Amino acid sequence: MGRRRFLGLGAALTGSLVIGGKPAVADTAQESPPADAPWSQSIGAGVADRPYGRPADTEASVIRRNVPWLTASAESSVSFSPLQDLHGIITPNGLFFERHHAGRPDIDPAQHKLMIHGLVERPLLLSMKDIMRFPSVSRIHFIECPANGGMNWRAAQMNSLQFSHGMVSCAEWTGVKLSTLLEEVGIKKQAKWAMVEGADGAHMNRSLPLDKCLDDCLVIYAQNGEALRPEQGYPLRLVVPGWEGNVNIKWLRRIKLGEKPWHTREETSKYTDLMPDGTSRGFTWLIDAKSVVTFPCPEKPLDGPGLYEIRGLAWTGNGKVKRVDVSMDGGVNWQTARLHEPVLSKALTKFTLPWRWDGRPALVASRVIDETGYVQPTIAQLRAQRGSNSVYHNNSIQTWQVKPDGSVFNVQLA
Amino acid sequence: MYSSRKICLPIMAILLACAASLAGAAEPGSFGYGSVATPAQIAGWDIDVRGEDGTGLPPGKGTVDRGAEVYAEQCAACHGTFGEGEGRFPKLVGGVGSLRDERPEPTVGSYWPFAPTLWDYINRAMPMQAPHTLSADDVYALTAYILNLNDLVSHEFVADRNSLPKVKMRNRDNFVWADPRPDTMAKPCMSDCVNAADVRISSTAEGRNLTPRTTGPLDTMQPK
Image (spheres, rainbow over the protein chains, first blue to last red):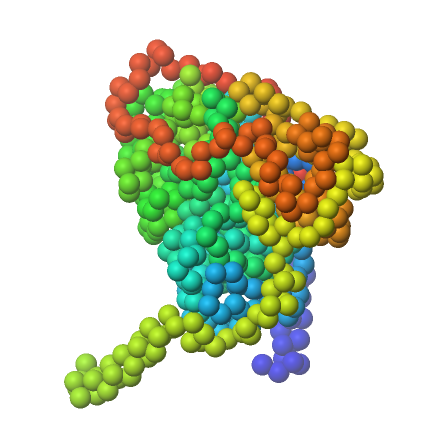
């Protein structure tokens, strides 16, 4: 179509709106929906009008949020994923929860390097171009901050799914197997541990057993098909499937092999579990099986009695979700929910269950069982073991109280 | 499918050859990407310190008095003049004997198991606005000062690569470096699992007014 003809067509379309007599556009006052809304009687924006794209304007409330009083500053804090507005198992990159210890660095990938040294045969300095030449893999895994749910250790505090469970997200990660890089440098036989370190202002570092590094750890440069976002470690991060978020080092700049763990600040003063007897558990990396009902939830109340689909997410650092049960009566009786494909190892799994709500008060909860047979505990069972001074690894069953008006509250059961 | 076995076999041979060369990747340097890190490069990047024995601590030293000066300039605004903390920035002192309390206070004095970890953390991450800018001597001095504030070393203590690993931290022996989980053994009961009369709400977020409403449009949140 020539430019002149195209312009003429545009004029004709515009003209038809003016000269077409009484327009059949939406009248919000009329009882039946309009046959034609304004967007059906006009031409929309062209391709690449938004060259990257963005959500619909009416989805503006679907954003990450933080809790200002939770931390000393936004530069060492966390933002939560809006689980109440997400669908399926993949978290959009712009909504993946963030945890920074020294703010978000904006790194020039042309200057970023990864050093691998220590107990290796051939210490290497790798550029991003070097790393992207290695054989690549793509895998779907969740990452959860072990403090997710930490605010619920003592009592139900936040009336929000986003703030009670939003420190978990899931993506397809693309990069290089860490084992590939370690084989390339040659592992000396005395090596038993790896120290992994970030390039941000915190130079945050953690110790990891070499066995886990060689099993399934990934050195990642892409997330859900695009380059990592700066908030997620651009240009390079570590993904340690099924283990607490803090070991998934972002802005990865150095890996050193050694004989013993380092006992860094992050694995002694933080990310350890204080027990009721005053002892502390170190090296509790694993994310135990956990699940949560994402609809209904405090942000998404029920709209009168009738048929609903209970929806939720389940995950386990120990492999695959095997079964999810849902209770509407505070754990007296349970029904097995439907798991939606794909059910992947160390990834979020979606579950649903139809529910005809009769308008009476209800206590809605979900309970996951993973492929090792581990059953998600109640908060009472968890407190019986660990007290309530812990911050981390609260994987207990979440109960939502549904009131007769359909409103939903975060509660705990005795 | 009419591709004959004769055609398939050479393709298989090529694929097998590729697989064999990839298997060879277990040899160090078989991909050949990147550059071998020189001793000077490694020395420049290698900042880590092992908590237990101080491996990696550099030369240098610092006194408690020098630490007080550096602390007043670099740290007091966030951590308080005497390590008592400002706002929600961490306390560096106090909490001794509190770890079994209802509100424990984990600090350097009450919780940290290894003194060299303090040097390492200050060196790699502090001060927050300009990390990794202090000299080794100043980091030693700050470490000495904070240990002294916690009554872990005397005023005459001089921190260096030999003295720091010998400082006995109060909580040194209370860490279990193994994961005893699974520590709950719930059973997946399906019906009449608890007595319905015993189901009681022990706590609720309703009316606590803790849920933030200032960080974004929470227009779908029920204002209860």
